[in-house]
Image (cartoon, rainbow, N blue to C red; front, side, top):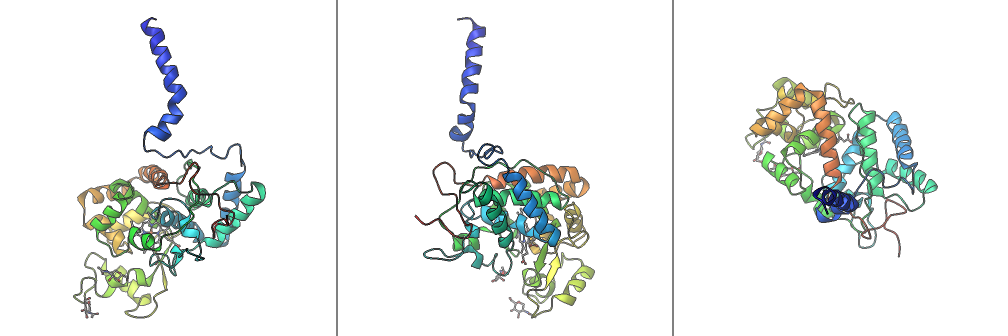
Amino acid sequence: MGDRSLNLLMVLTLLRFAPLCLCQVSNEACLHPQFYQRTCPQVLQIVKSVVAKAVAKETRMAASLLRLHFHDCFVKGCDASVLLDSSGSIISEKNSVPNRNSARGFEVIDAIKSAVEKQCPQTVSCADIMALAARDSTVLAGGPSWDVPLGRRDSRGASLSGSNNNIPAPNNTFQTILTKFKLKGLDITDLVALSGSHTIGNSRCTSFRQRLYNQSGNAKPDSTLDKFYASQLRAKCPRSGGDQNLFFLDFVSPTKFDNYYFKNLLASKGLLNSDQVLVTKSQASLNLVKKYAENTELFFEQFAKSMVKMGNISPLTGVKGEIRKNCRKINST
Ligand code: HEM
Ligand SMILES: *[C@@H]1O[C@H](CO)[C@@H](O)[C@H](O)[C@H]1NC(C)=O
Ligand SMILES: *[C@@H]1O[C@H](CO)[C@@H](O)[C@H](O)[C@H]1NC(C)=O
């Protein structure tokens, strides 16, 4: 056999096994955007239309759905564990510190699931629905689009401790936040780009009060917070009480997915401590913030990449997990 035909044989062999290689030899998950092409071709359209209806009714819902996917993926992987209600041996993640009185959008996920179940019973996972809803929400708010790899299955359990410990807290240090991302296989570029989600949505007073009154136990506000912005915040976020009062994460364009979040950070007007530390505690992170503040396209491109990466955190595939009928409870066996 000549060199040429040998090469051809090798190429053909590689092509034959390529899909298998990508999924099984490397650590890469077997998710792919066409997963439901044969079994539920309408799913993308159904999710998009229910999300669009919900966001038309309440703009903030786009932010809430985007965040839900994050809070799912950081706990046992993107497996819809965040959606389970307490029942039997399951202790719901909805009661964790990051989620309690804060995570929302569960009714919208229920509405999507029931619309999808009507067309394609027991076919599409709740975890995939959340990944699609996060993408559609981003697009509706004016952000980038991307193909969502699919094929996740749903967990048969939840982890309250995982929710409390793995999801970064707004008063965690920069290093702690970065470590929590690295534990999920995400790097500093993903951290900065994904924090750009805070270009939409709201925060409660309780999530940033410490910065306004007593940042480091010396009874002084955070010195890295703009003084005028701080005084405006104090007007509606008093020293005590008003814990649930709501504030825009991006006060310039609170419902538009753009790069003002990064511009605000450079003007010392990030709302959360975890936002502001991206420019005050790490030169590498500051450089990324500057890049995204200058160039929306770069931000959008990286955001889409990082969302796919986050969506790939430890999915259940193959025979692991199940396709829940109701996103709030595991199937009875
Ligand atoms: C980097 C570490 C992060 C921290 C410490 C953090 C913390 C927070 C906090 C404290 C809130 C306000 C919650 C409240 O007071 O009710 C919030 C809201 C939000 N977060 Fe994050 N977050 C982080 C990363 C992310 C990521 C990676 C995403 C998405 C990919 C995200 C998306 C959102 C959205 C969209 C909202 C607004 C939700 C709404 O209005 O319902 N965050 N975050
Ligand atoms: C961070 O906030 C939590 C919840 O409010 C609080 O229990 C904890 O003491 C705070 N940690 C620091 C380092 O301030
Ligand atoms: C500020 O916090 C420190 C330590 O957490 C506490 O001892 C002090 O009493 C607080 N001061 C005020 C004015 O709240």
